[in-house]
Image (cartoon, rainbow, N blue to C red; front, side, top):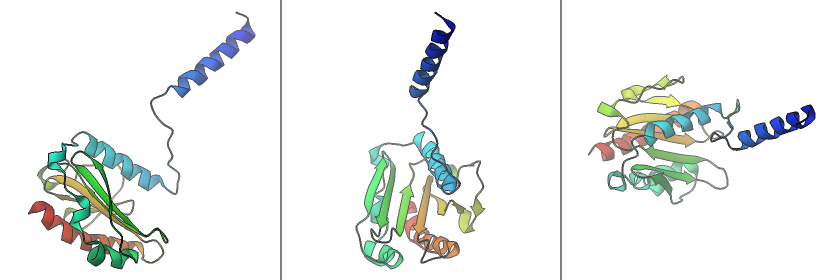
Length: 178
């Protein structure tokens, strides 16, 4: 091969190898870096102990759409469930304003001794062993790592969103522990 062909071959090989990479490029930007960090942390903390469906909790059944969620998002809507195995979630969203409430319930064993797992990103400690991270409030219950987020950036301040999340946690936690 000539030097020019070698360079072209090397460039093509590099592009091919880059295309075969198993890791996807990060979508984190300064605006969504906290959310990306939270998603990554939750995924890794829950993936190792996803459990099976027998351990699943119906995250949507933990709150009343009309009584608990509607006052926060402005309308009554059904929660949209998601999750895998014993890790479940529910999202209630106002489609006109994108104001939402989300509840994530971890699998058993993701918060051993009802203690949130250590993480390497800055968090804000809260009452009763809670902590805030990227707009969500994390809490442990029934040895599960859980979180609640009230996303209402225009209608509420960050402190008001956190207080609303804490009120919802007070309704959810006894159901998980009882």
